[in-house]
Amino acid sequence: MPPSLPALDRAHHLHPFTDFKALGEEGSRVITHAEGVYIHDAEGHRLLDGMAGLWCVNLGYGRRELVDAAAEQMLQLPYYNTFFKTTHPPAVGLAEKLCRLAPAHMNHVFFTGSGSEANDTVLRMVRRYWALRGKPWKQWVIGRENGYHGSTLAGMSLGGMALMHEQGGPGVPCITHVRQPYWFGEGRDQSPEAFGHACAAAIEERILALGEENVAAFIAEPVQGAGGAIMPPASYWPAVKAVLARYDILLVVDEVICGFGRLGEWFGSVLYDLAPDLMPIAKGLSSGYLPIGGVLVGDRVADTLIEEGGEFFHGFTYSGHPVCAAVALRNLEIMEEEGVVERVRDDLGPYLARRWSELADHPLVGEARSLGLMGALELVDPTTGGRFDRALAVGTLCRDISFACGLVMRSVGDTMIISPPLVITHEQIDELVSLAREALDETARRLSG
Ligand code: PLP
Image (cartoon, rainbow, N blue to C red; front, side):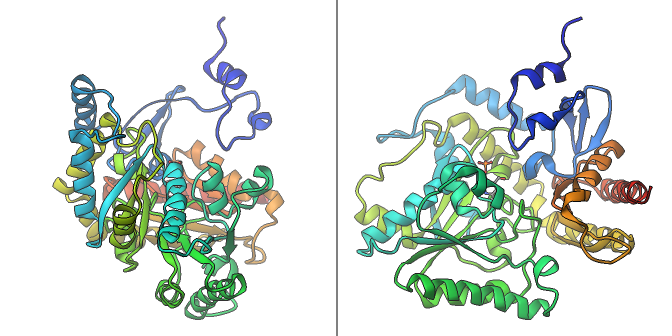
């Protein structure tokens, strides 16, 4: 008998974010096909994909229009670069579309192949900007604990994931991290309002400790995604913006997850009125059908780079790849034609909020929160009401049980997360919530048994 796919996979494939040794005999689950909001595995199970892949399949699976856009572009011009004074129609069309959808002061985009490359590009742009403005000493970038900005060395360094730093060794210099506005996890001794102010004050304290003239930029997601779907208290962003303005510090808003409708606006920056200087994007830009990312650049930075910078000595072979750009452009057109973002804002987001919050009555759930089509459940020990011992890995248990029940949820510690495709229906939201409840019930049974 030839070896099974999981066996071959285990023998040869080093997966991202996977404990290879712990894969076990059964190995990885083989996903074979998908349609709409459902994925199918090789054993014939159908699962509701509550995570839209990795927060990216915003239009859902099996969209023929995106396949056609790719096929047509491959025949027309499968590859050409955008270096050295050349361009092509998909890159131009996508750049124009993105700048029309972005906040009014953002009129340029630099294309990359991924969100990690976008954040590497951000770092180089920030440094270049301050050097051109005659302040090369402005080098420090402030990120947030538990933030995620990618897996390249710069992405890892900007992010604040402890395990990445432990394994990654020294990162890029002059990057530091401040506390995240995670009220349920770290702030419940105060009101959310007071906690939001305290987190903004922590940024100011760090700026003063580093020397107020030395801080170049602050980077954060509008809502922290991989860190645990952390919606900040209402007081947080206005207070942060005031601090950054006080010390003339650039604001980088990582929209890799929050962009393209996830929170019910085209960008999370619009929801929170952030007016960023730089916005890294990826994922939902192409609904994940092909890899593409970029950095939307505000006029302040773009004008300096263009007017004073000469050649920006930076770029990727696949910057603005024509097939990826054609698919991304078609993806954005469909989102506009179908009013996807408005539907999340006016209908699906409020509906999910109502149904998801019902899970707060479950003994394992300490908080059920959602915004747009992103949601989280905080798991707590029903006997104490407090967090479980981390070593019990209750979140991982609940994630695996959820898979077995037919729902893809992600766990970050003991926080369960959902981020389904933006084309999900009310009935499918009902199904998602009832599968999540089934997974919680079974998790509770296993813990007590
Ligand atoms: N930024 C954020 C907020 C992300 O969530 C991610 C990926 O999950 C990245 C950047 C990195 O993107 P990529 O995996 O495309 O490199």
